[in-house]
Length: 364
Ligand SMILES: *Cc1c(COP(=O)(O)O)cnc(C)c1O
Image (cartoon, rainbow, N blue to C red; front, side):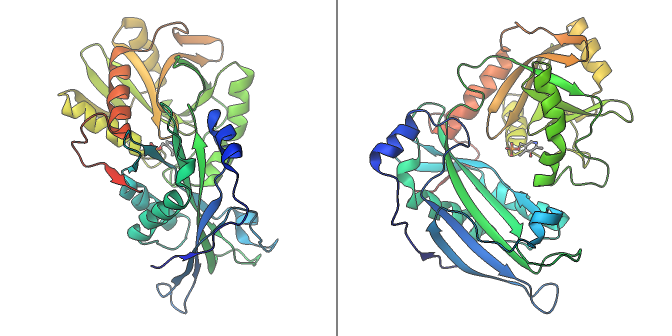
């Protein structure tokens, strides 16, 4: 697919850009361009067409107020990062996994399939156009946010016949800010993120909307993130609002909740599983309940807990707050296995550790 180029006549100056890159934070600033590809349905279910692929100046989206994304939330997204290597080249991590996941989410949200190569090309386009925005600092990256929205103006409830795929990019520092300290996690007892047969395994905005009230509760209780459980059954651990969870046992096994349909399959999750297997660690994808977490931390059988996702990579979990109850230790240092897998993963991404699995793809 050919992309038309419509460069911005209003790019940020080198000084303005430098000021942003000095302290990018997360998700607050955006580059000068956006990539767009539109889709229009055909007469049959499978005859829709992607068209008008273009690079255009970053700016507001003109949309009809009746556009179905605004009413029924027909939207999906992805998140991945572009890393600047020592020699100035820019790479991303397992983009075909994100492309495949976007298409899986698209099936669930009744949105059209996007060719994986168009997805990867769209990342190449935005990164090569806005390459000066890719940060060079340690732990920094250009966060890429591809998303797909239903733009058709129509209030009847059905899958939209007009859709837009877009990519925006945002320079990113360290997600949780400052040095790496184990975080406190709040157990959500009143709210679920996803239910059986629902959209939990799709990356859609609606899941995040449903998690926000629990996130507010977490913050009121001094925690940075929420843990969602299957709290209407046996308190099986699912995941955080936007990160998967792992446990390290004292015999060196890595345990993570099995994908049951309510958990999002993280690219970081599957990479961590692979790296652990490469080290000869035993990996178990299975059910783990809140009771097992509590008992195994108390008995010393669980020695480390961490969360993982693209934005924050790997974050050690210090304490779990279950109402008044505390599981774990707020002041415990990050675990050794956690830190070692984190270093290896970050090293692969920044090009300082051998990429044994061919996970990196050059963007610019
Ligand atoms: C995106 C996301 C993750 C992490 O996925 P990565 O591909 O590792 O970034 C985990 N949980 C949820 C709910 C997510 O939306």
